Structure formats: C-alpha cells, structure tokens
Length: 491
Image 1 (cartoon, one colour):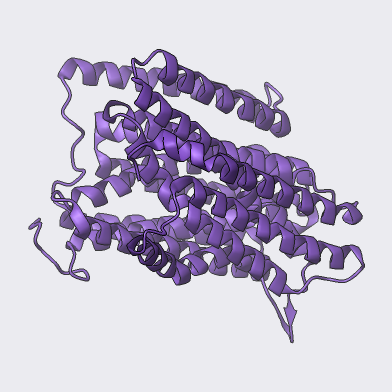
Image 2 (cartoon, rainbow, N blue to C red; image 1 turned 180 degrees about the vertical axis):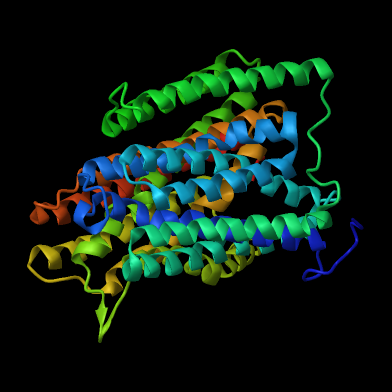
C-alpha cells in the first residue's frame, strides 16, 4: 500500500476498510445489546426466557463488563501471535457465529454460549482495529487525529443504525430475527474487510517481532489458558455446576476492585517511582474511581432505562409503535451531533486560559449523568401516578448523559498516557479498561434493584442514582485543587 494514497476523504484508502468494518461491528454489538435485557425478561410464550429483572440485568452487566476485560488478552494475542489483521478476521467470525447462536438458541445455556462467543470476538476485533488505524499514520500528528475522528464517526454510525434495524425487526417478526440481523451485519463487515484488506498493506499484518522461543511459550500459554477457561465455562453450561448470575456479578465486582487495588498498591509502593510519579498515580486512582462511578450510572441505558422505555413509556404515535430499542440509538446520534461542538468549546476556552482541568471535566461528566437521572425522577413520578411517560423524558435523559460522556470519556485514556511513566502505560491502559468493566458490573447490580411490582419506589431509586452522581461530582470538585497539584505540569 502506498502510505500517501489519499482516496478516502484525503486519508489512506485502508481507513475506509477499517471504518466500514468497525461500523458493521458496532451495528451488530449495539443492535444485539438493545434487545438483550428485553429478550431475557420477556415471557416464554413470546419467545423470551422469562427471567427476573434482577437476573437479566446481572447477565447484561456481566456481558458488557466481559467485553472490556477480554480486550486485554485480545490485544496480547494479536501483538504476540497472529497479528492485528488476523485477529480482526477471527473476531468477526466469532461475533457472527455468536449472534447466529442467539438466533437459533432454544435454551438459556445455548444463548449464554452465544454471548461467550460474542465476547471473545469483540475482544479480538475491537482493540486491534484501532491499533491498525494508528499504523496507517506512521508519522502521527494531526493527520492521525483526523483519521481517528473519521474512524470514530464509523463507530457511532454503526451504533446509531444497529438498534434501529434490529429493534424494528424484533418488534415486527420476533426477537430471533433481530439477532439474525445482527449476525448478518457482522458477516457483511467481515466480507467487506476480506475484500478490501489489501488496502491495509503491511499494517497489522504480522505480530510484533518475538524470538521463536517466546512465541512457542506464548502459544502454549494461550492453549493451556483457553483449555482451562473452556472447562470452567462448560461446567455451568452443561448443568454440571449451578452458577447464579447475580452472585457471579457480585463476585466480579469484588474481584475487579481487588485486582485494581493491588495493582495501584504495587505502583505506589513497589514500582520504584519517585514522589512526583506517585502523586500522578494518586491522580489516576481518583480518575479510576470517578470513571467507574460514571459508567455505573450511564450504563443503565441498556438495562433499567431500556425496561422503562418498554414498560412505562408511551411509544405509540398515531398508528405506529416506536420499537423500544430505538431509544438505544440516541446516544450515538447525540455524539455525532455534539462532539464537534464540545471539541470547539474546549479549544475556545483553552485560548482564553479557561479550559477546565481534567478533574473538573470528570466532575462535569458526573453532573451530566446525575442531571439525566433527575429528569428520570420526574418521569418516574408520572408513572407512579398512573400515567405513561412521554418519549421526551428519555430523549432528554440520554442527551444529558451524552453531554456527561463528552466531558469525561475523551480525556480518560489521554490522561492515562500522560500521567503514568512510559514503562507502565500499557499496563495502566489495561487497568483503565477495568474501570469501565467495573462500572458495567455495578450498573447491572443497580438495575437489578428496580422492582416492576413496586412502581411507587421508582422515583426514589432514580433520585438515589442522581444523588450518587451529584455527591461524587461534589467530592471531585472539592479535591480538584489537590488533584491538580498532584498532576504537576501535566495538562
């Protein structure tokens, strides 16, 4: 590939290959995710599994958390063993087959097996496709940033379209047709990748150079680990061991907190860092906690808010019923609409030396999340009073949550790369994914506390989440001067 080939909006043609592959992958992921909880709680007579809200939201939390966790071994496999391009191909195959299993599954065990295949697939595809985008711009600079911006639009385009199509098909033809559409979407993305893969040239074509001995040991480690994990997964799927998703969710929360705490203790006391570096690790700890708290509220989108849209929102417009999953497209379209405005706003403020510091932006993100749930308090009071809520309330909630995301999420990964010593960047990026994973698990636990038989308690429950966000934001604002000092010269 000629690295100066500018046939895609002035960028390398390979960017188009990655753009459309990621678009279809996100189409599949968000399309399936919009149906997941609704399908699990629906009655068996309607094609669902008839699970309780608590079990269904626990499964949702475990699934979304696992997707972030497996990105770490997925990147390792590509780097050490097969290269990013082949990781994308295998990942796409796993995702397409996994959604196909959801389509044909007739028992919960079969359905869970499909979810596991999807988790493996996303773990192989998601981190490595971003890595190839970076390889298309070996000189870095503003052109690489522009390339990632275009790529980011592909992510959100897929996230917007996916729920629209799968939710409409599920409403009209049944849940399983929605899952089939998700499978077809990934198959189209994979086919497109295979046809246009040559435009990537050598980018992501081979793993990082390793000695033959290290590669051999890496393969052995992979096969042994895969065998043990497969055995561990097979036991509950075959009914040999009974596993409660609610208990598994609780254990997962404590395991991730424990792993993160141990790693931060290692960095602070045993990694040989100087005083300035330890202060910056303390900043990372604060941001880690804030990030997890934000996603714990934000990720109600696919669980408790999705159930609210299905059960308590008036979705009838004349003779047309709005599919519940369509509300899951709102975040993506708001990001597409408002991300350029937020970016311009930060630049405008920076020119006037008014750009908020990183902890202030995190506090603003938490405030945006809390504000969305204050809106839901009003909507829930209408429902508790016997009425159905208008769609407007959910639209406003998702918009405020997106504002919060745009304040917090873009600076998160960037902060990690700037705060930690270079030799720990890769490890700390992995820990940052744990924060998102932890937030998703907590989100599932929070959603499980909503009781469809106790509508009167719903306003108070949403108010609790709002207070949880506001208090977290207030604490972040209070300690922001200290955090800012710990950051030193880092901006």
